[in-house]
Image (cartoon, rainbow, N blue to C red; front, top):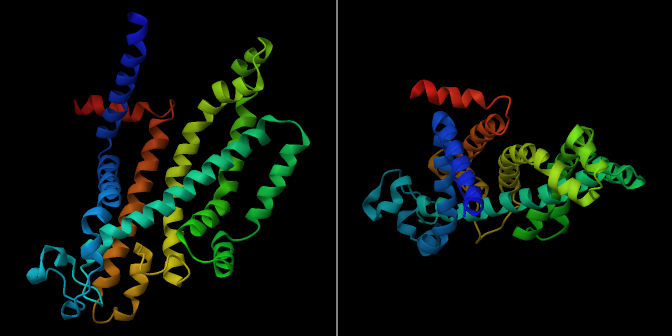
Length: 305
């Protein structure tokens, strides 16, 4: 009975410790709450507000901010076709988050897998993988995305694939550098002496040491990919109407900046706040996942208590 309950107790204790450290950093706490709201909007928004976000009402063209005479959804104003901006921002969060999350997940999985091979293997394969990363990094990521999307149709899947390819070298090089350092530690050498297989050493001993760094980079990279997708949509080669993203909404409001600034302001503000929240949360994760610096958050909680 004791052996079966001990892992559950340790998991609950670790979860409480993480939540306590998050509570001690108020900026990270607010950022986490905001990101949870954005995720809920991305999941539930299209299901609840899809009709309101696409229904046109030419009488409400460029409705002013806080003009709720047509309903509470017009609290942020209306766009050039009379559609409520609040509903469109909430619905657009799905595509924006989907592209960013998909690109980060694919690049992290592929890049970390290649980085583990390049760092642990002493064969010619590691050099081939590094040269592949050099080829990808030789092209500016946004320029490469522009060229590929001009050749292919700018669909959600193609955008995710292109942005993922451009971010693979970040995870590949980071993972390789971490593995080169971890594989020389004593516990890895002891596992080798005891006859552990390469697969067991990589996934049981090396990967858990590398994973916190990769998660921190992924949080930062999420904001970069989201900005890249917004830039592509702003240039007109990202997701195309009738699909919407925050970047596309900013582009659609550009002709009306002089007389209806809110068309671009609110989706631009959503991009800024989401990016800022991701950066704040990434900074907290860097401290919380580092045993050398974690004491700062723990001591802060004791002082507050």
